[in-house]
Length: 91
Image 1 (spheres, helix red, strand yellow):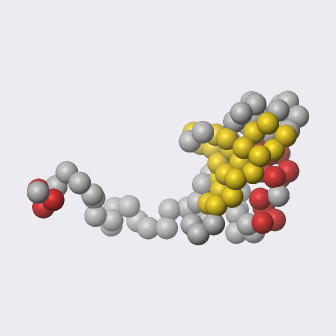
Image 2 (tube, rainbow, N blue to C red):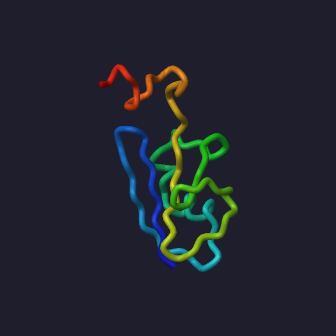
């Protein structure tokens, strides 16, 4: 089965297409993709992963056409970032 794997570290984006056996898991896809060697800062014990925008565990089985995503940590405190749009100051 063919799947895609994506990762962005801010300045660099990676998109890898893989051919995997049926029943392969998210973790197997990540390991076989070579992304961990190319981006040594990835720490799967800390970072979340997902399929099509939904966070999933590493042992989740994949289906043909899935897109595996490795998420980065938030680097700012969202409570300290001003909201955009919808305020009286914007008018």
